[in-house]
Length: 167
Length: 248
Image (cartoon, rainbow over all chains, first blue to last red; front, side, top):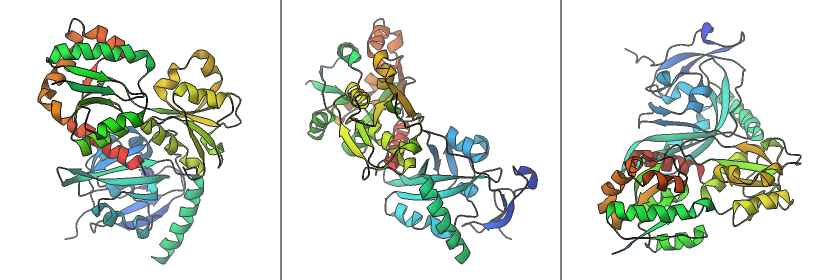
């Protein structure tokens, strides 16, 4: 029997705004989920950082207030959810190129990422991820997202659209 | 044997006496001789840290990373309710209204306070600015940073928020805050080095009970702190992980 996605399919009533695109998104764990996404962007809050932590399997263990606000989910909904709760269908697989290899080498991973909100909208971030090592053991990952420049957002949106078209 | 206590050089000048009062109080509380050494610059302090001359330090978040991960320091406590935030300010009459207005070649006045500098550089990223396309000049204090901005020698200044708020009214009127960070988890903390760790529990206990000590509240007032907050190893590791994501 196919493994069930821990996240529910999105429903039209979840979405803010009348117009949306519909996708079936498949994640690295083999599960799938229906995504409804809109063209409504939420601006990154000035002077703030979005911070989250996950366990080694990518399950969220900590979310700061900016993360809660920007994601549209409650803290209770985020804690225990897989980090791919943020995965936007416009993000190509290559947008996360090198993420796991870089972290496995003990290095930081940086990238421009378009994230999905609970209401189908999106927000752009410049993300940095580090592995959390305690007594030589991997205990999780910390991801810190900061405000990206508009120029970089536009450039990456263009590149990602081309990569998505080739997938 | 006497141990050495030092304080991150970004402490507010008004509280120099407070640290001497605190040191006297702490020595009595834990029954150990401790010498307080204050430094005018981060560079001078770092030389003594590298030479393993420091046993206890009120460290800024940037140095805390190195001290905990490389020098074996352990966290003791952090000032209650205090967080390190940064402000970018321009002169009151500046044409810059938002961060996105800032242009390549921006002249920035900053101090050698590492965490404030890191936060400041992050806050100018949305304008596509980085160390490669701005001019950075270092000033010995936040008052001098303010003067450079007011006198037009710099287009913008990086400040520790606490120091910006402590500038005199006359200076503040000639500046305008462009952005203030709201990160919340970055903070100074008191750390104990390997030679003094046999007293870690005693120091933690003394700070934890400071409000109840007959002289404790007066000492805290001299430091400008409401009290000390316990800080766990994991809280510290989390802050260090977060700092790591912010540093190139």
